[in-house]
Amino acid sequence: MQNGVFKIRLMPNDIIFTCKPGETILDAALRNKISLPHGCTKGGCGICKIKVVGKVDFGRVSKNRLTDEEKEKGFCLSCRAVPLEDVEISLIDGSKLDESFDYKRYFSLIFGSKTVL
Ligand code: FES
Image (cartoon, rainbow, N blue to C red; front, side, top):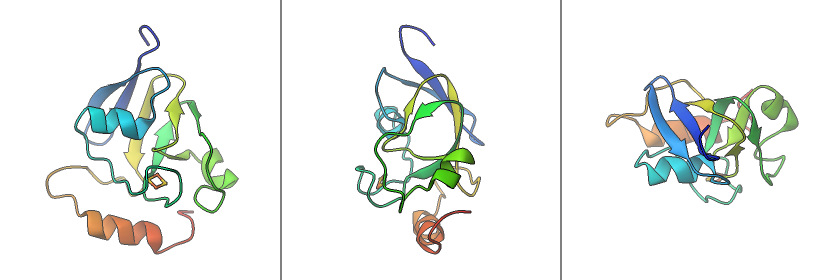
C-alpha cells in the first residue's frame, strides 16, 4: 500500500492493478481496462462474484447473492468489495480472463446454482 492505494493481483493472468482508497474491486478493474464479469454493479445480480485472498470490506450485499459461508470461504462481490490491503483475486472457476473468455458460459455457471459452494 502507498497513500491508501492498494494493489490487486488478478490470477491466473498475473496482472497487477491499483485500487484507489474506497474504490471497489470492480471499479478499479474497469478503470484499469480489465473487464471483470459484471452486471448490475449494485450488488443485486451476483454476476461479479469472485474469489479474493486478503481483507476486504464486503459492502452492503444481499445474502441471496453472497452468503456468510461464501464470505468465509473467500468470495466477494467485486462491485461491492473494497480492499483493506493488497489482495489477490480470481474468477470463481479459476479461468483466465483473456480475449477468448466466454462470458456467456461464465454467466450460466453463476446462474446455474444458487451459490457457488
Ligand atoms: S454486478 Fe451485480 S452484484 Fe455485482
